[in-house]
Image 1 (tube, rainbow, N blue to C red):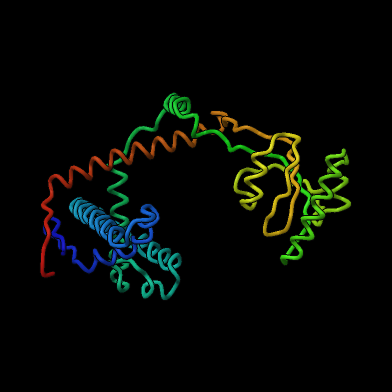
Image 2 (image 1 turned 30 degrees about the vertical axis):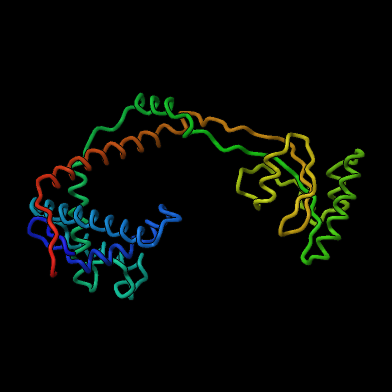
Length: 289
């Protein structure tokens, strides 16, 4: 079904094409849901976006913004460059772009949208106090990640036989370590990865393969792991130090917080403006188009 927004018709084919381009984005937020449900959600989102775009286009046209031709030309060049060069128009999934004239119209509308957005979302910059209040209310957003400093000893393996042999070696080495042999010296003598004497430095979660990651973050400082199997072979991991999450100082974040609060405030103001346009508009479904 097509949609009529005031006097403008949004054809059903354009809505369906927009929904198709949004499908993957919607699916990521609806993991495990049936395909039909995801398609309907993508269709609803497509309708909502295209209604918003139509209302903004109508309002910006009503205000008769003058747009420099050179800005349009530069916008077209940038769009072509970012979307695949000379064949960008042929390849695009944009529901309203089928040729250069369509592209020119879309760029012109986008520049008008930008003017409208600038006018209707204008607001004062949040103060440093506003930023500090937000920082103090949401410390969870400004903590760094948990980190560890660790070393490892590796016996590489590729085949099943290699893994069995490597496990025997790693267990023998672990016994020596339990009897007091120095970890660094063992790495030099026995490891298949003795770079930096096995020291992996300081790192956060997700930097290592999952099997390694799970074990190293469960260790206590100065603790030696049991043998750990990964795609590379068998490891012994020694944890030197754990670094708790630390709150990043306000001074380092102040400007970013002010910018974030400003953008959030502008979004709220413009959303209210757009809601007002919707309330005043005549929006209805149209069949046969």
